[in-house]
Length: 207
Image (cartoon, rainbow, N blue to C red):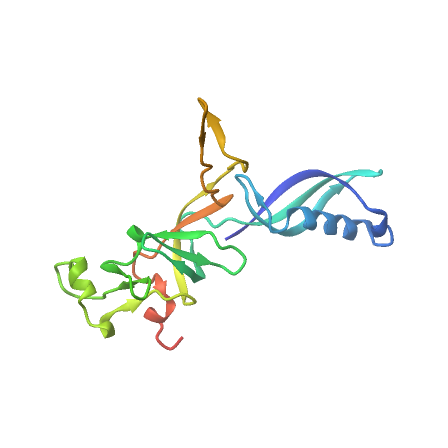
């Protein structure tokens, strides 16, 4: 889930940091710049791990290792359900909110309950998979809901970095087009479709 990446940068220390040890001051400036920031094709910066080299001078050339959040494909992680729509379930780790579970990667059979505004899994040993109508007619006590705030396990399927430019509507051939909704800079696709995934409470009732 966490990785180390080597980065080179230049840092100019502010006079207010001159009373601090140099390495402490440099780490502080680097954390301001990289912590909680998405680095394209690298991941979400967490914190500076260590400094590998620091030059002398007013502007210092620094090589350092940064802890980044970027789970690998097939890794299983734990998060909390943040939101649900008919198409996706959004999962958060607490510091990263862009983990998306498409409806196609939810446990089967499942359906979206428009009254509860969330999906539910209908755990059944029947050989034939029930239709959506049959699932929505099922007893509430038979449904395992994916409620907001519940703790879940998900398996990482893919990730993607986006570089959507903000700005006003653009004119194409004299016609202004509405700007598309901006995508998150870093987005993870995950699954709950296999045994052991989904709500932890399904598999560990005591938790």
